[in-house]
Image 1 (cartoon, helix red, strand yellow):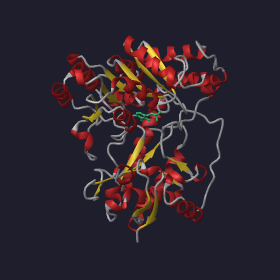
Image 2 (cartoon, rainbow, N blue to C red):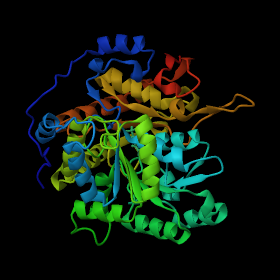
Image 3 (cartoon, rainbow, N blue to C red):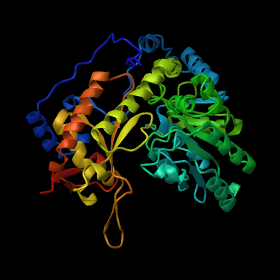
Image 4 (spheres, rainbow, N blue to C red):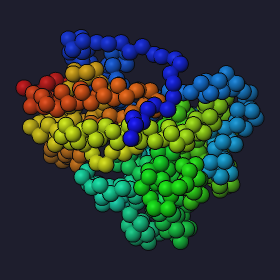
Length: 458
Ligand SMILES: *Cc1c(COP(=O)(O)O)cnc(C)c1O
């Protein structure tokens, strides 16, 4: 088999500032060993997130120039509406400035104290918007989804038996909506099968509960279905995506993922009454219903991005990139969460650096190691992000997994960039015994990972 090449040519470039190990040593120290506090310019390969970091195409940029900036009834809205409608068949499509704005509007209306909202796994902004409205967000992913070594092909699936029992236990009147995150971001970018989506719809229908998709990575999920689920191998990803949306009553979407844009999102649904309420909130907090929180040019870029994301050559290259990273990590023996998902590789920090105790944050030690060795920015998803202290005793309670996420921006880096990342990981892995843990010198009361400061444990 031949090399799977990037299915695009490059006609605009952005320079990467190269740094030396000595320079990086000073930079990381000055940043208090927090990678969020480093200037992006001082990063060589930035794998902090795949959100809003895509490279837009020539056609998307051309669309930006054609954006209709009329306050009401802009042509760009029609274009955007038609593209989303063709894909999802949802009647009401409400643009928002990003995914969490769609979530906020939806849960403003649906979530109150005493209500429960189940999902396979809620993404953290979804959970936060539900909890902000005093409802309870409940994760019901299958058991395999919680096991970092399980090779289940659809680790993002929701447990249908648990879901039905949950509906019975809490009562339909207390469950305004059921969510399904595709792919399951918090679970490692793991896909959900068509059978499971269909099954979730059947259970929801039986109890009269609407099913909404958190559809951020619908195209990556569609490609996994084509590759892994019987009966879908000869269907196009567009057909698969349309079938997925046919089982849902609505969706929230961050266009910063699978719509290949740098900002944007939407909320879509079929229910007329709910849509009316959502639009009323939208007008107060985001903008008029034909632009939401976006410029006309943003709507053009989303409309075009939704076409490009379903290009099978693109998806093949995209998913293959992540798979390739996994294969090479297997070869060097570096431990990561398996199987690789759609948008990121997650290094398993406890297995990578077992000599560092969890209260000294092995994930942070690796993330800092990757920056020192090669200027790579990754993201600790472990004790710093999710660790808690017992309110009574103050004892540290670590999360189950200590991970380092390397998230891949779409269409931004080439194969040689990825090979470089692998070389850096290999170097850090070979010298893993020299990695040292960290302790806080400053932490904010909420979302501490963004602004925390650290010192090295000796
Ligand atoms: C990014 C993301 C969101 C939130 O979208 P923003 O555009 O960042 O507000 C919601 N759900 C999932 C699964 C996401 O990945």
